[in-house]
Length: 210
Image (cartoon, rainbow, N blue to C red):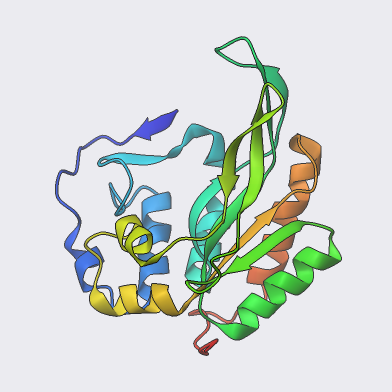
C-alpha cells in the first residue's frame, strides 16, 4: 500500500531536472522519503513510500544522503496468507546506486561479514540475475538487483539532470538482502546499513569508483 501525500504532483519537481550528481540525487530521494517532495522519477506521481517501509525511512534517508541512492527496499515479513490465499514470504532487502569506491567497499565488506546476500552490478554486468526477495506460494515473485541496460536505467530515472544521469551510469548498483525470510532475519540488513552510513562524513562521499 502506498502512502498518499496531501497533494498530487502532476509535474516533476524542477529540482530533479537540475540534479548534477548522484549526491544531489540522493539528497532529493531523502526529501521524497521524508515527504518533502511529492514524487520521484519513475514512481507513481503524488505517492510517498509504501506503508511497510515507514519504520525504515530514517535509515533510508540517511543512506541516500551518505551516497547510497536507494530505489527499492522492503522489510522482512514472517510468512502470512495473502489476498490470494497463498503463503507469502518476504526477505528484508535494499537496492541502490553507489559511486564512491570507499562506500561500496564498506557496504560489501560489512554485508559479507554479517552473512547477507549481496549483488554488485553495473551496466556491463549482463550476467547478473538479481536476488529473489519474495515468495508467493513457494515460487519466486519479486527480485531485487539484476542486470539493467541503458534504456532501463533511463526509464528508471526519467527527467533528471544529465549530470546525475551520467553518474547513475558510472555507479555500481548494490543489493543487500537477508539470507532468510522473515522479520527476525531482516534486522541484520538495517543494522549493516546503519553501521556503514554512520561512518560516512557529513556531506557524503566524493571519490569516483571508476
